[in-house]
Length: 77
Image (cartoon, rainbow, N blue to C red; front, side):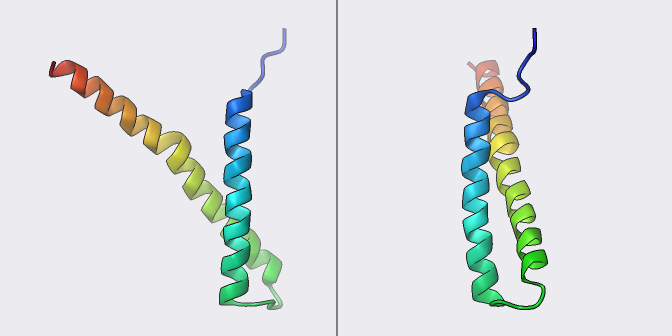
């Protein structure tokens, strides 16, 4: 039996994050530099950096902090 690596909820979260980062990177690139010679390389770098930062925050840091706070609050009850 084949096991899925990513469940549908995680796929949906990654898709939403990637679309938002794509829009923000496009707007930032166009506002800051316009259509320069190296538009696509700058745009791709902005997208990757934003995606890593946002996905890391949403999928790792916030749930991890929530888990730690819940565990420590259970200790002090």
